[in-house]
Length: 135
Length: 150
Image (cartoon, rainbow over all chains, first blue to last red; front, side, top):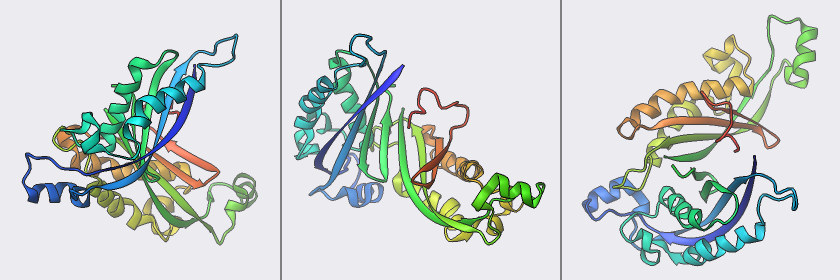
């Protein structure tokens, strides 16, 4: 089994807030991430696909296919956007790195034509990342 | 289940030396790491916790709490210290990065899992880079298979 990873980047803003919490609770739980005007990050997404090597091509899948899929499904949706306001999945759910990883999995898994989606890794900063394996 | 990883940095000195080996054997096994005066590294530590996402917050664990526990239990004990002399366990054990990985896992496991008990938080792994060219990873109960591809 071979694992192929493709990386992509997007920049977006977000903030954390739960309308069921009081303003005081929101500030305590989410700290500076609660600023309602939002703040931004340069995110890096790593998509890892597993599969067998096709003996004819020597490849698990055509990387261009994965690049286009990432661009269409993720980058166009999230790049230079305010995640809370512009990405429907985050209208009522905090766009934490945890939830972004799960959302990217849900966007890509049904559309991947070759190989098996193995892992989504999302870096919010160089020092913070989340992995999701679909379960 | 999501896996959340946070990176930290600390600098420490050490010397690799085993009293049970002869001076010649120590030099052979540990090479320049056996220098009696010791030497130092800038370590990069990755701590990975795993659990379910809290639907109210969207988070697996509070990052401020994670930072606080790692600072108190690990960074304050190791940063700018002599591992052989300042760490109780390394008075008798060689402070290789392998052993340091295990030590950091032991220091963090109970405090983190207690703090995140409400959502079944688990310490998944500890990964330590001694330099940018070598790294060590401790994943209890996992031979580094399915989820070990870094």
